[in-house]
Image (cartoon, rainbow, N blue to C red):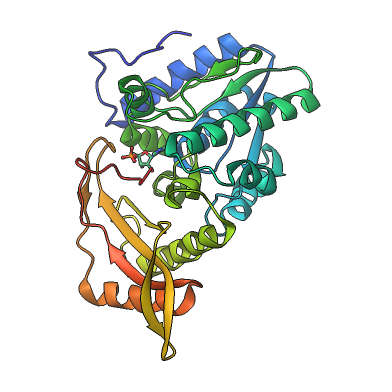
Amino acid sequence: MRNDRRPDDMTRITTSELADTFIEEQINMLREEIGDKKVLLALSGGVDSSVVAAMLIKAVGQQLFCVHVNHGLLRKGESEQVIEVFKNQMKANLIYIDATDRFLDKLAGVTDPEDKRKIIGGEFIEVFAEEARKLEGIEYLAQGTIWPDILESEKGIKAHHNAGGLPEDMDFKLVEPVKILFKDEVRFVGERLGLPANMVYRQPFPGPGLGVRCPGAITRDRLEAVRESDAILREEFTRNGLEGKVWQYFTVVPDFRSTGIKDGERSFEWCVIIRAVNTKDAMTAEVENIPFELMQHLVKRITDEVKGVNRVLYDFTPKPSATIEYE
Ligand code: XMP
């Protein structure tokens, strides 16, 4: 397919005209390439895969089969929302698979971040291959790979599950209609494709999901602490007008316990780390200045409501030297 790499002289997509031209070109290329064949798409519900879905629905309509895999590493309420938007509202072909046990069993005891990513990515491919066999006649696999994924994989900074690494026997051809775009361009294109603003401007969420926010070996109870604290953080950011203002915010629960006091008794529990950053293209990032009162409120809610947590920390580190995610 043409446009395999971002041309050095490509103008940043910042106007409706540029976005519309890109969309038109991509749709023509997709139609030409795919013809009457079937396409399978990993629809996580994040910005990238949602924009790819919208693009493919425009290009090939019902030839697109969206597969939403719940790998057990999604945020609270996320699968429900994907089903509501894509199946109920957009009437897309959507297959929902709850593969939680399968993923968590494979990840049990795995501590190395890159191994975790590879396992999650590998399982994803497996699940899609199984679905493709069931559907019959699937030739293409669509992916929401974006340009920074490719650059960072090439530089060896980290392996992105959606950039290469397909097993030898996989006979899917790839379609990656937003792979030469930066994140801000993907959002803009999504808007022009008619996706709702709350979907296009939603904060990004990594493919390996909460798995990279549960550093070290993932356990179900610590994962639950990540999920519940994340839900509280999102709720409070929405309530306090920070949703849409802060680019990405989430919680991390490291595999580390410290001493505290709860109900007058010694506790020995995890800490929740809050991360809230602003960036344009995720290549660099600055830390958000969260009002102190809100921070205090977050600490109270998280330590009161999240099981197994007695301490809350705030990460003040920009990218670089840190990356946005912890693994
Ligand atoms: P880092 O941690 O590299 O993250 O500073 C930059 C942005 O990319 C997201 N991210 C991922 N997205 N698959 C994805 O689709 C991944 O494996 C992945 N890793 C990180 C991260 O959330 C941030 O927005």
